[in-house]
Image (cartoon, rainbow over all chains, first blue to last red; front, side):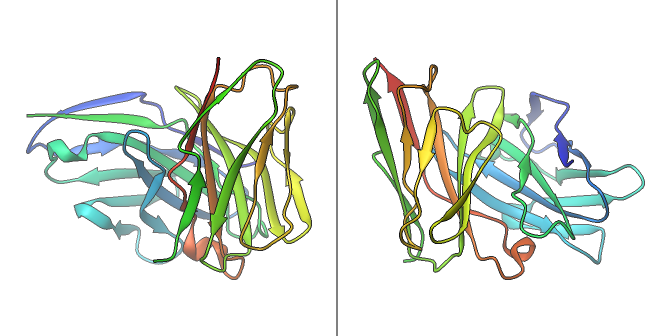
Length: 115
Length: 115
């Protein structure tokens, strides 16, 4: 079975400081990993993905994520947070060789960037 | 522009009433998905479909029904058997060819409220 854990319901960070939103996963075999962002009353928007290759993945709006196979983690990071980054962030996973099984999403982490 | 359109944006349901949420995509995607979002519970899969005239139950299919008569359309009916339907409903799609490479494209959601 596939699963995703986002251990923090809420992350608060001051504007200009670095931010990290944590994600750990469990799959059989190698994973596809995704980060999405959701603004109020909107659908999810794709930020970045990891399939294979470089463990550091760069995505939209200055976000990046680091894949760590030994720790089964895929934490989302940004060097300098903006107030406009305040939103709900979701991590998602599916196994690389699972056919077309749907993505499994975490419960989300609400990021609040304070000016 | 290509995308997914969900309608209506807001929907009110009376007790014992069936309602249908619309999801239309013009991306030529093969697979379509319905998720339910509740505060603190993340996204939970209701139903998904990978080809026309075929669909599979997700984790919380009870009280819901779907159809896939056209590739572009995947409506969700919330039946009177769904005892707690108040939630935010999200539709998503993806091409099946190398689905991990693409992730999902989401609609803007429908907020359903029981009155």
